Image (cartoon, rainbow over all chains, first blue to last red; front, side):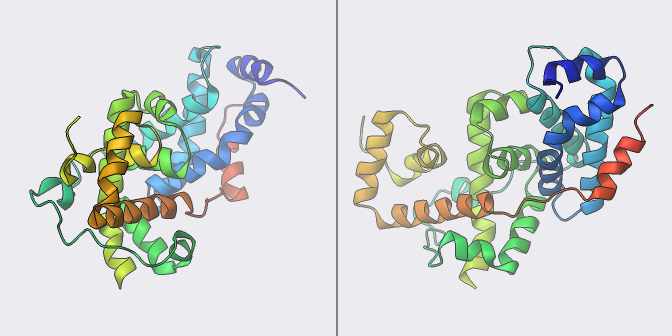
Length: 187
Length: 75
């Protein structure tokens, strides 16, 4: 079996079969990223998924040998998502951060365990809707970190942000989602 | 470091849950939450939010889509 380096070299010369083999192991991850960021818009997710690989094939001659292919593909996909949703760029409104009170009524407990919560269809739908409502700059960070499982430095590399900025966006995004899910969990 | 108030603690909670926090600050947070039930409840719900996200079922591309972009590559 050809190594990734060989496949990159052949793909850079326009070998589409080599490229197909090269990116095969990243396909599910890229599709899942697109699916979660294009929350509730499956046609958009399918476009992002396909355009990621078509763009990557076109740009591959400029891919640096010392770069990480997975990170590079995530970056292309994230950019494509960002382009689609960039109009809604305002900061997410998070009452707990944006109001002065210390112990607001938001400081409530949720009785169900996370696995039980995740199984609830209504909750899954609420997660999709909450992600859709989260501005894309924050949504990308939340999806890369909490759903795709990238580390803060990896996410920073994909998003071309500092690690501190990644942590800040992640926290704000999580608080927004927590607030949006609160009503569903309590009902 | 002076004892933390709830609002001062709030901005550090994601890093605290991710264990990406300075050990001294971590000790301050743990000391604070020992005597603060609202903060304990808040951390619990934030933790569950993250857990729910992590447990979202992964979506996989259908075979027709895997073939579709390959057909569009220049041969």
